[in-house]
Structure formats: structure tokens, C-alpha cells
Image: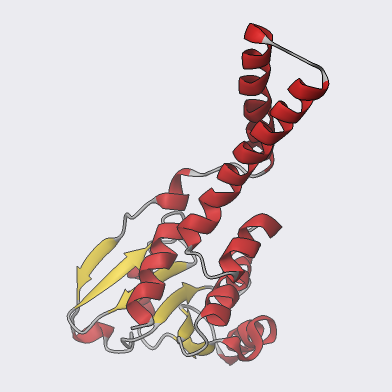
Length: 200
């Protein structure tokens, strides 16, 4: 996330709003800049209209080029899977992040999950290592420190099947079912849903 998004996020806006509001802010900034320059340069008529329309578009295009919106950012796609006895280790009232040791995307996810924890300190986020040993667990503890819960999957076949080879995979367990997001589905809408569910 860029500093504009972090600003809105730290001021209590949702993840989706924090992603979109900078675009709106840059449109407003572009309009103000256009009117100011049109007044200074004394543009009138069609020239002024063209100027006032084009400057916000240029400013917005510049911001979009630096911080593009991706398809998964606002996706609400997830897989809903009925619970069975094999999934007992996936405890409810927490977000479980299925991970692999040495996975750069899993490490990258910690930055965003740390921001979730800052917004909701009582929320439990568990990094579950699907394959590995105690040394693998220490790798996660080294980078995640005390912000998260860490565990080794006792049923690696089950967790690997849920992840389908995509790590990290995010799981929101319920008593009767699991909501599962792959790494490319877990965007702003998904985080808002997780926060809303686990902060109740």
C-alpha cells in the first residue's frame, strides 16, 4: 500500500475505501489545479473547458500509472467448503494463512496482515505452515515476530488440497464451513469481510 492509502486506512476507513479515496482526491486536486491555472493564464470559453477537463485526467492517469488497480483488489470471489473431521485443526474465530517456508509471497503478506492486527489488536491471525518442520516454523517466527500465531499443519494433505498450490491461501473457518481465498482473490473486499466477521 502507498502512503495515501495508509493515511486513509489509519484514519478508520475500510480497505476498499482507502484504495479508492486517493483516486477521488487526485481528481479533486486536478480540478483545483486546472481552475487555478486557467485563472492565472486567463483561459476562456472552449479552451478553459478543455483545460479543466484534461488536467484532472492527466493527474489521475499519472497516479493510476504509479498505483494501478488490479482485478483482485475488489474481488469477492472465494470458495465455500463444508467442514469435515479432517479440518479440525483449522480453528474458528481467526484467519488462517496457509503458507510455505521460504515463500516470498507469504513473507510479503505479513506486512498487510500486520496492518490488520494494528486495526484490530484482538484479532487472531495464524500462519499455518503446510510442509516443514520446527526450523520452518522458526523462519516464520523470525519475520512475523509476536504479531501472529504460528503452527505446523498436522494434516498437510488437507491443507495442501485447500491451497491448491497457491501460497499464501487465506482461510476463514466457521463451525460448519470454510471460506477460502487464493492469494490473487484476497483483495481489499476480502480483508474488509474478514475484519467485519472477526471484529464482532
